[in-house]
Image 1: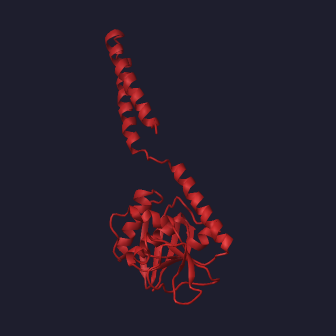
Image 2: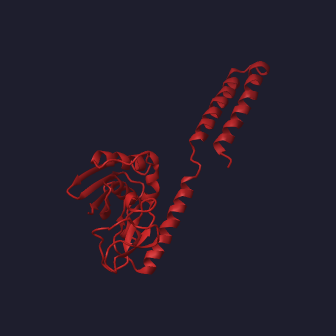
Length: 244
């Protein structure tokens, strides 16, 4: 794929290399010579900028994210599922971390028994109606960006969430995490994505909450669920409940 910054940079460098000597030796113009040299400098800056441009544009990433969300939302709405999802660590799944949504009405998963198989419809408990669908979430995909699994302390969880949201995805300016009993409180300052009252978010949370829940689950090595999410005063507040 052609990079417009690289093409522009090489064009400016070539034009400057040709124009600067002509201006100096033939036209004897200091001003035009300086213009040619400036074109060379700007050209090298454009070439350097081309190396920092992402391979996939932000617009393309947003399109793929919306497509995945709408497809999952359509599946949840078709099945009539309104229960909150439970995020599982990778140690409880065959493959990358996923979230379980109970199939039974008004069902809340309090405990997950054994390792969940890598299928769409799975059993998580001993009762006949302990069935759920396992879905891939934005958090489950982005957790692969972490080099190592964070520890269970709030500082390590905060560092990991901040690394993904602030350092890699540039979706917020800062992240803070606190823990009380079996609850994690995550505050995301200046989020680029906000909570919306739609079917998908009510079940799985926003992409920001999904990433925070997945990292928390992986760090604590326990299932978690997004209990509450709100946005006000330029901050997203996410309350995560840790299950047994």
